[in-house]
Image 1 (cartoon, rainbow, N blue to C red):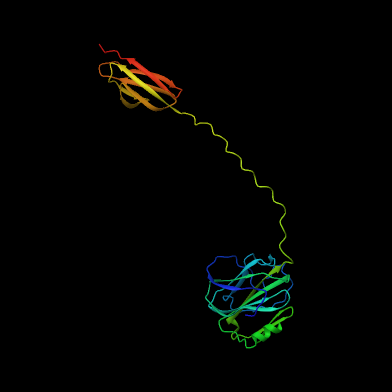
Image 2: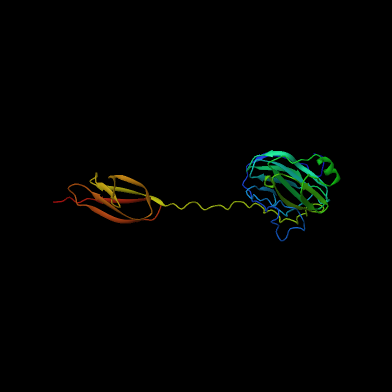
Length: 276
C-alpha cells in the first residue's frame, strides 16, 4: 500500500456485536450529496457492511484515532477503497479473503485535509481483475474492468463480475474537521475533601437481669422461654418490657413483669412460698 494520510494496521478477526450502519443506497436524508453506483444485487442474501467506531456521519479531528469495521455474510474477497476529502484514492484492503459473519478491524489516525471522507467496501466470491490497480490509484481514476459504473465526484470505477450475484458493495462516510478538537472550557474546581463527620457511639440495646430465689434452684422462664435455674445472670436481654416466671416444685409459681430500660443489671429477687 502506498503511503497515505491513513496509517492502517489490520488487527485481525474481532468477534463483535455492533450496530449495523445502512447499506449503500439506503442513504439518510442528512447524508452529503453523493452519486454512487450500487450493485442491484438480485440476491439480497449476500451482504457487505462497513462502519466506523463513532458512527456514520461523525466528526473526527486530525490526530484522532479511528477504527473501521467490515463484515460480509459469505466467505469472500474484500476490497476497501478510501476516498479522501481531496478526491485522492487509497486502497486500504485488496484481495483479502475473509470469513463469513466475522467482524474485521482496521485502525488508523485521522489526518488533514478536512472534508467528507468515504470508505467503500466491495466483496466478491471471485477475485476482482485489478491489472491496472496501482496506476489507477496514482492517477486518481480507479478502473476495475467491466460493466458496472461507480461514480463519486471525480472518481470513476468499473466492476465486472460474472455472474452479477457474486459481488456486493456498501459504504460509509465521516467528516474530518478542520484544525484540532475544540478546547473544553474551564472545569469546576474539584471538591475539597472534608474530614469525616464523627459518628455518635452506637445506642446500647441490651442489658442484664440477675435472678435469685429463696430457696434457690427455681427454674427461670424469661418471656416464656426457659433460661436456667436460680441463682443466675441473664445477659444480652433486649431493652423493653419483659416477664420473668420462677417455678420450684412444692412452691407457688412466682411471676413478675418489669421494664428493662438501661444498659445495666436489673435485679429480680423472690422468696418463694411453700404450698401447704
